[in-house]
Image (cartoon, rainbow, N blue to C red; front, side, top):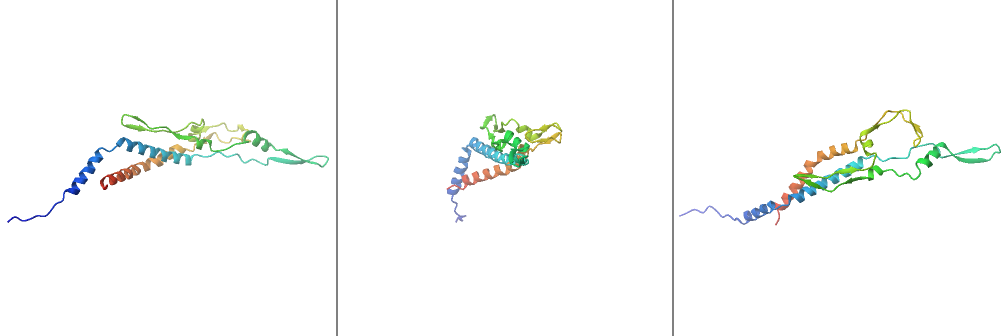
Amino acid sequence: MAKRWGKCDFKKMKELFERIEKLGAWDTDKFIRDMTNDIAALLLGKVKKNTPVGKKPKLGPKTIRVAGVSGRKRTFLSKDGAILEKYWAGYVGGNLRRNWTTTTITKSGNMYQIEVINETEYASYVEYGHRQTPGRYVPQLGKQLKSGWKKGKFMMTKSVAEVEAQVPGRIERQLTKMLAEALNAK
């Protein structure tokens, strides 16, 4: 008389095998493009946050009141007021921050590339710093320059370092999520 060792239902095993086969047909190109867009959006948000916004200089009073010989008081535009009207009338800061954009994804070989760019002409000077002539009078500021080097803000450099630290974790979470959906699908 033969002993029975038990029953085995291979239905679940067959379903798992079918799900694993579907992973073979998984669109890796779409996944990589989605992750590239996600990382570029993250970098764009961080670099915009780190970009300084220009402000009008704090100058003295815009007008002054002067009493004449006859005792009548008249209002005149002060030197600082003239500077504000000539150079700063209608000024709205944030041009550098607003001009950050991304390009479309390009693929060459196995490499996917997307660029975060700023076409503002002075962006590199704000990023890396620039030389200036001490003692030079700048009429827009109404002051003389004091130092020979203006330090950069490194908004892109700092943002890239922050995002590079986050990328492996983001990719791992997306892969885990995708695998969990594929293997636990019913």
